[in-house]
Image 1 (cartoon, rainbow over the protein chains, first blue to last red):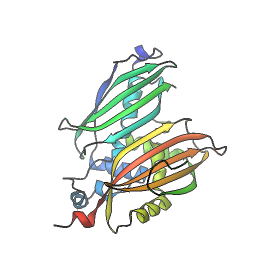
Image 2: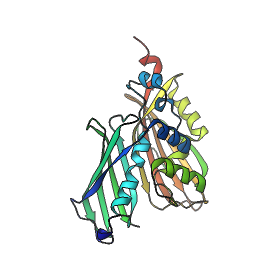
Image 3: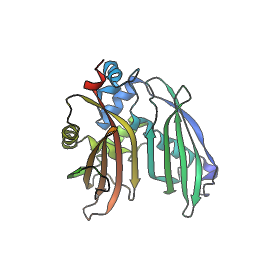
Length: 136
Length: 133
C-alpha cells in the first residue's frame, strides 16, 4: 500500500503503480476450479483453434480480477464499488501482462474513477476497464 | 429487473447464493487477492449454476458452441458478507448479429435490497460454422 497517500483524496491524473502478472496453465486450471468456469477453450488447443485463437487464452475474469490487487496495492484505504471491463484481445498462458491505471475523475467522499489497462506481451491493450472507488 | 432491449429475454431464479469462506479463499488464491477478503469478482462464480448453463445452451440452440467473454461489469451497492444467504435473479437474452448471449444478474438480500448487479456479454462462436471450409 502507498502509505503516504492513505487518507488523502485521490488526484485526477494520478497513476497507479504499474505491475506485471503472469498466468501459467496451472494458474488457469486453478482459476477454473475456484470459479467453476471450465470452458475447454482455456485448456484445449484444438478447441481454442476452433474459436479462432492461436492458443488457449487466459480467462477474461482472471485478467479482470487482477485489477483489484493492483488497486489495493495503490490505495488500501479505498474500496472498489464498480468495475467494468472489455476483453479486447487474448492473453495466452505464459505471457507477461502489464497492469496500469490512471485517475480520470475525482469527487467528494472521496471518490475516484479510474481507467485501467492490461497490456499483453505484444504491447496490445488486452483489457480496458473502468473502476470506481470509494472510502472503505 | 426489467427488459430494456429488443430481444426476448428469459428470467431465471431466484437462486439462493452464499459466500462460503473456503470458496472465497480459493477464489482469492486463484486470482491473487488478499487473504480474509471476499474478492470483488467472486460473484461471477454463481453464474456457472447448472440451471443457468442449461438455459444458456437452450437459448443458443446449437449443438456445439464456444463462449468467448467480451465484457463484464460488477456494481456493488452493498458488500457481500460471508455465510449469509442472498437471492440472485438472472435475465438472459440472445443477440444474433453478431451472435451473443447477455446475462444480467442482481443479487439481493432477503429484504430485497440490491447488493450487486452484474452484466456479462459472451460472444458465441459456433463450432459447426467455424469448422466449415
